[in-house]
Image 1: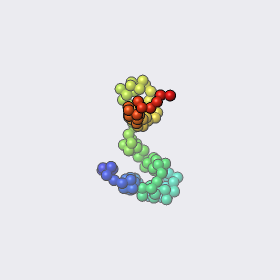
Image 2 (image 1 turned 90 degrees about the vertical axis):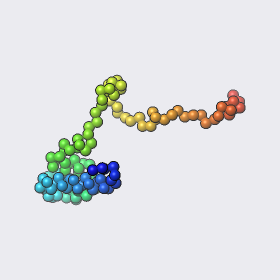
Image 3 (image 1 turned 120 degrees about the horizontal axis):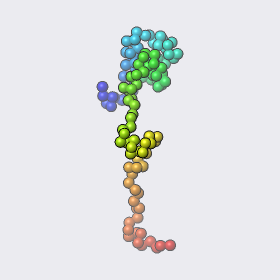
Image 4 (image 1 turned 90 degrees about the horizontal axis):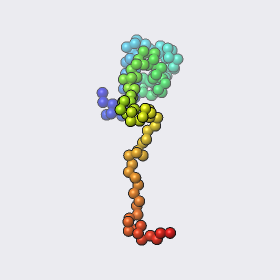
Length: 120
């Protein structure tokens, strides 16, 4: 499935549908799942309709023995040995953003303007 072609709402619905299918494959009712996870029935319904919190998702995946699927969902990011050596063994804690990619600001005054200004 190409998730990039879907809207956020469509992705939320797809994830909810997949969780519902997983629950049904495990032969659990929404109420049984709610009781086993100590979540409310409304939380389970919200999750299956694509409107939920991450903590609800984690609790349900744990109860359905599907926590290992999180590695498929967002794989752990590893640092290559070359990058680690380049960083002198220091693991990045923050992103640099665009500041390293920006060109130095050019002085907007032209050379002629600078020559005509008196030096104080």
